[in-house]
Structures are given as C-alpha cells and as structure tokens.
Length: 228
Image 1 (tube, rainbow, N blue to C red):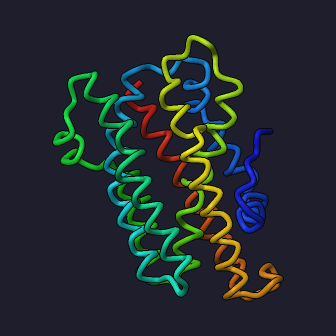
Image 2 (image 1 turned 180 degrees about the vertical axis):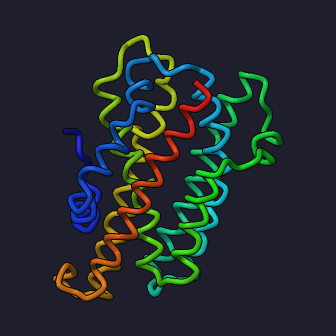
C-alpha cells in the first residue's frame, strides 16, 4: 500500500475517512501522473493553481508558529514554511518556465473557486480554531502528497513525463519534513488531549476538519482535470 509512517494521529484521521481518502489519493488526475496519460494542459492548469495554493498554505503554516505552545511546534511549523517556499514551489517555477509561464504570472494568477474554498477553509480553521484545528486542516495535503509520491515512485510508468513531480514528493527531503510533522502532531495532540485522544470530546470535530480538507483535495484534482 506504500503507506508512510507519518504518525499515530494521522493514521487515525486517515482511517476515519477511508472513502474520501482513496478518492483523493487515487484520483484519475493522480493515476494520469502515474500512467503518463494526464494531458499536459491539465497538469499546467493544476501547477498554476497549486502555486497560488502554496502561497496561502505557507501563510497557514506561518500561523502555526503563532498558535504553537512549544518551541518544537514552532520549529516544525517554521521548517515547513521553508520547505514550501524555498523548495516545493521551485518545482512549479521550473516546470512552468519551461512552458513559457514566468513566476510573476504564477504569483498573480486568478484563483479558481475550488482553490478559494480550500485555502480559505484552512485559514479559517487556524484563525477561528486552535493549533489542533489548524493541523487537522493542513494534514491531508501534507501527508497525502507524501503518500502519493511514495506510491507513484514505485508504480509509475517508466515513460511518464511526470517523474520530476513524483520525485519531489517521494524524495528524502519532503519525506523527512513529513515525518517531523507527524511526530510533532502526535506530541501536540497528546499535550492537549491526553494519551487517548479518540475519547476526547473534541476528537469528532478534529476528524471532521481532516475529512473536509480531504474532500477539498478531491475537488482540487477535479479542477485540474477541467483543462484536459
């Protein structure tokens, strides 16, 4: 199954929404990346929107620094912002530049509705909720891409043109960041909810945060496919 060990809490959240999770991680967009059959127009449309998404996603992780209660939480959130801004977004810039789309065009691209819905949902979770609300909303994107990258690294067609994308998320740098995030979330939940978080009154609410963000990921892939 190529599940990566991103921590106990992620595993609980993931198992709490099996159908949305599979719809997200095995979407036809993802399978198109794996098979090499995804139209380039769909991939570029997705990359442009994902660049805009990552700008807001980085801001949400920055909010995690504000909401954090420990130095470790602050360090992991700050490190994730660095990984997003200085590494992951570089893939988008490089790929789009090869297609004649410069960074200024990416940064100023208009957001499609699915993008607006997802990014604002995550920011609202952090602004209205606490650190755990924010982490539950951020987790599907982080861990889902890590899981997808690891699976596609093993299963992708040799001639797929999307190996650079796959290698970004399957690579050691991204996987190390996600392992650190997973450990941090485990500790954050234990600190706030105790050793049996599923018995806490807030657990169902946090699960719903995670599930909703997962469903928004499905819609994000749908958006990409519109340009196919």
